[in-house]
Image (cartoon, rainbow, N blue to C red):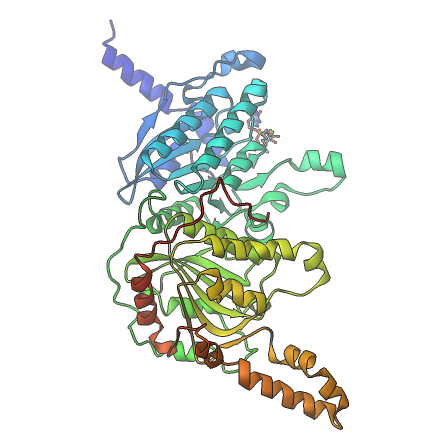
Length: 514
Ligand code: HXC
């Protein structure tokens, strides 16, 4: 008679083989790793504890009785990333297309609940055709439960979604509720309905890649936050992202060792911002010359590039960094950059990451399409997100800080804790040209040489407002600083605010303009 322990090993081997060689081969043919190989890339070696390996579907409809697969198409459990506990699920497209039925969903829900109880991040690796058609409403019910738990976990534990195959229907809505979505070029697709359905309904012809590939979601729709060239790079970036984050909303972000670069006084910072008010430069050059080791993990680099968002460390302490990007659309705020910025600020606020803004913004983008598209509503999200945030908020006005964008990015009225300015800062209701044309219109029109008068008036306005000293004199800028010394100034600003306590009135929740 077979010893029970040998029986166990036989069962374990069979179950861990998932759909067997055929299923693995199917993944490989598509250039994809298997669900378990992916967990090996995500987790520290030898740290995975599996949950529910022997769980199977209870369905027998539409041939499901013959298609029972141990684990029901998803590997779930916990492990360590850089020594920190995370919970994870990894769908196996090789078995039933990674589709989500009743028991598959139950395994994910259980993992979500364990992550919440433990206060540990959740990483979901998705490779799924969506709701398992054979299991009908039970599949839909499964997704509903997952969405509800995603929502309950939002702002409590970091939630990361890694899309590694064609993900349809429910398989994309759960990621959309989570904090960060990763995709891999050529492998990942996200869509609600595929090309065939679209053709039938609207007549439009589109390929899977054009519809929902990594380039589309990272650059056009803004659904994805990180794109990698392969799965290995993708998981390395997931691990790096987690290194900036606390395990949950009650923890502080993890401290790293002190950095020996850049130096406290960094002459490179004198060279980056051009003297001309309208000349472009890349705000990332500033960021990389200020934060520890020049290391900056940019979030959504290809979407709304007029705002730069990402994570860096200052004296070992993780911070959320925001910068208007003069190299793209002059760094204006518009619909997409407002959405990107507001969401980033809310993430930082939820997870105790101080926010540092580099401000160089001419205002909100004028235009009929922007107004029709709801730039008022979208722009209001930025005001709402910064106003609501109670984490330390520090702004450095680098050059322009005009109008509503001044308020959003550097206005003490929104509760900024420290506002500093470079000597090149210009703080005003609008740029000198526009302002002079409005307030001196009559004088300009009546002048014998209107053009000369216009120039004179523009200069007069520039001298009064296009400097940091007027605002500094009114107490609305705390310090005008030498750019070379930005790093120690920022370190002190964060020390000054590190014990900040700020409360908000009790309420069920606010109603951010959506
Ligand atoms: C059951 C599924 C499945 C599904 C794929 N499979 N999707 N089984 N339910 N939803 C199975 C296929 O039958 C096939 O089984 C295997 O997975 C691989 O699928 P292929 O089609 O051969 O692979 P590929 O050509 O790579 O195409 C992948 C795909 C396509 C683009 C994802 O399978 C597809 O369009 N699937 C349906 C997508 C969809 O509409 N899902 C429902 C969304 S509605 P065999 O037997 O060959 O191995 C939804 C509701 C929730 O999710 C909405 C919440 C808001």
